[in-house]
Image (cartoon, rainbow, N blue to C red):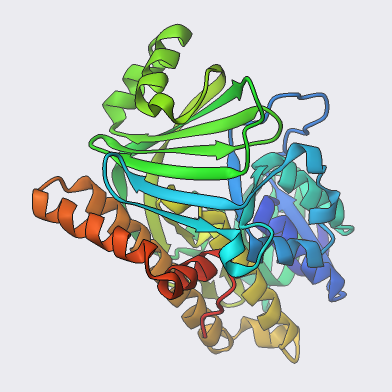
Length: 390
């Protein structure tokens, strides 16, 4: 026999974005259920950083601070950065710094699970870890049935359950995109000194590689390489892996020891529409982009900010079930997502091309950007979430 529980809003996916939305809606006095299929691993007693790291922009930090989530993070387990550089190996380079915008920081690197658990701890409503078995729209409400025999219903359903969103598939919302012919290799290392506050990314003939400073002496090395190259790397011994990384990074980093590594495929995906009868897709459930600039989760937080504003302005929960109510939201978010995704693709394909004329054009473009402060600051402000797209 099923147990039924009625809510104003159900948020499926208790990750960084979903849990922050739940906290924000709770502050607006909505009765919310935050539902996820599995409980995240806690950071307690773990000294080394986890592999899944996110770059949180200043705009996202401001949002999380307004909800009381950011304050729960231990300052000793996160790493702010104030300088960001992009360069081509042996070619042009461009450096962005916080000082040029009169800021103390450009952003912060945080372990995904750590930020997720802090967001969940901020939410005082019902948080449940259950597997959803079916979804249906019945008598003007969304009904979710779980493996535990529960039936949860609500007027508004928010899907923040990731790129393989079960809710998106259940709603039959189509997507478009492609798989990039690369995988991302993430390697956590331990240096002999503090990792600093400067993050950078370089492009070479094989792809791109980056350095992300983490807390204390830890850092994350990110490589974008063809699938066969990544697979070959994973089959090597720790000593061989270290030698390969040292060869790629050269004198850009000091001596290090490998802590842990993993790889994952890269996929671009965008939902044709993100709303249906009061069911809304946000974050990776609605879009994924190439992670070259680490903007994926920040797009998700921008979804969340706009979503909460849209809900706050509704006259009633019934308004939220009309597709026309979401037209403005969908337009604003599509413009932001498409422009950022397009920029990542432009960078990706430009640096995949090796003809001399393409190399000349991209080096000239990056060089011009570096000596044009107004344009450089505009791009930086947009990445930080300081510019709102209307």
